[in-house]
Length: 190
Image 1 (cartoon, rainbow, N blue to C red):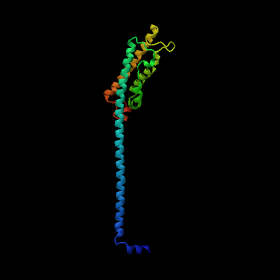
Image 2: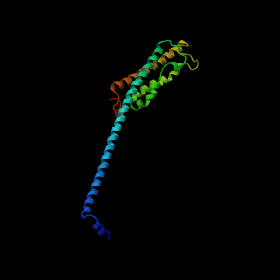
Image 3: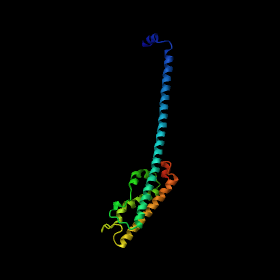
Image 4: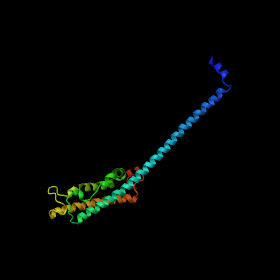
């Protein structure tokens, strides 16, 4: 009953045009969905590349910062080992780990294992600077018996050797430019 009434009101070829319009709308909608998906993938890929590039820049800066801090610590420890410096407070020795602590995540995530271990061992020795003092007598570097001074000098020389090992490993990373991506970082230096 409604069919003949609609046919009287609607133009003669309405259903032919309506079908074409529906197909056109469906095709346009499908193209919009596919285009949106491809654009999203492209933007995501650009974002990941930019994040990886930033991580590499942070890593390279961290290597330089820690190398410089280790070199300064080496100089201080070497001077203490060579001279008869009087120091009463372990915190006043001047050995620092602030730069290392501020960039440790960038280093840990990208340094090859052997280099990471060398740096960690050097900083463990730096953290142990309190062992340069005799805990029972609280004698300063330069104080105490000749045997105590000699023991402190040996510990300082071991600290210098540990720092030298870390500096050498970081020099290798600096000269090689470091890893280009996380995948190459996990496989070691290129």
